[in-house]
Amino acid sequence: HVATLSKTHSLASPVRPLDVGRVHRRVTAPVSAAASSQTDDDGVSKITQKLHGRLAGAMVAGALTLTSCGPAAAEAGQKPPPVIDMPGGCTLEALDLFKDTRAKFSLEVGTGALPEAVLDLGGCDYSGQDLSGKILSGVIATGANFSNATLVGAEMSRAKGQDAIFTGADMRSVNAYEVNFGGSDLTNVDFDNAILTNARFGKGKGGEWAKLGGANWEGALLSSSDAQRVCENPTVDDYGKAILGCK
Image 1 (cartoon, rainbow, N blue to C red):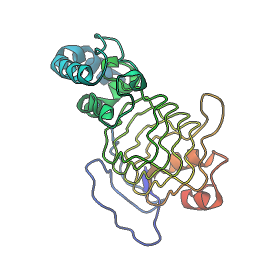
Image 2: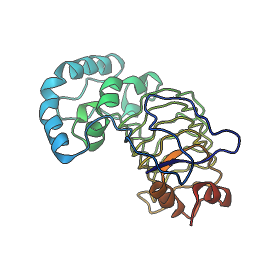
Image 3: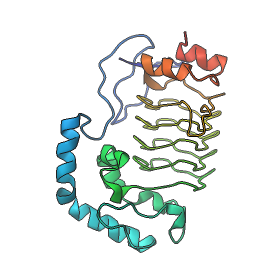
Image 4: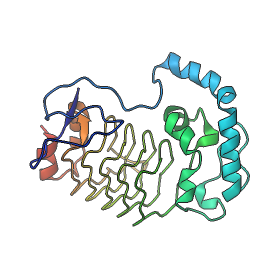
């Protein structure tokens, strides 16, 4: 069951391709997960078996793109080098590497079945930059800095966002389906109209909770069980607890 956390000024919301419908909090509606590929084990197995043959052309194209802006692309079965180690480093253009593959196969990229398309943003600093509409699906953003960045409408399903910095980021209408934000600093982040289904806001690798003070949850799309899982985080402020319906 999915609920949109109610807004005081409007119950309407813009229509988005990946939106699964918006309802009042505590009113149930059928869920169509914002996923880019099959999630059952048999489906994943079948996809994985076909990927390297079916996507050979896509991987070659991706390799040419990576070669044009950095070191030689990784061979089949190997991850490209971290973006920070590529010539030019953490540019906005580097975020477009393998974007089509990552958008269509975020499950396979996120689980390591397509390591050639993995984008490792660890150590990158995108603070204050405009990343609106960028394809961040399946990226490894552990330790990256997105403080005060604009990520409006960005696609980041199944990204690994642990121990990253998102302080003050504008994440309205972002698709953060199944993103792990464990241990990240999300202080004062705006999640208005964001898809947060199955997202995690727990502890990071160092055992520290994600920081959620001042985060705006109004209009965010998440299920009642998702909301209660967020409520387990002791950093949620009183206003957030009221919006999330924490028990």
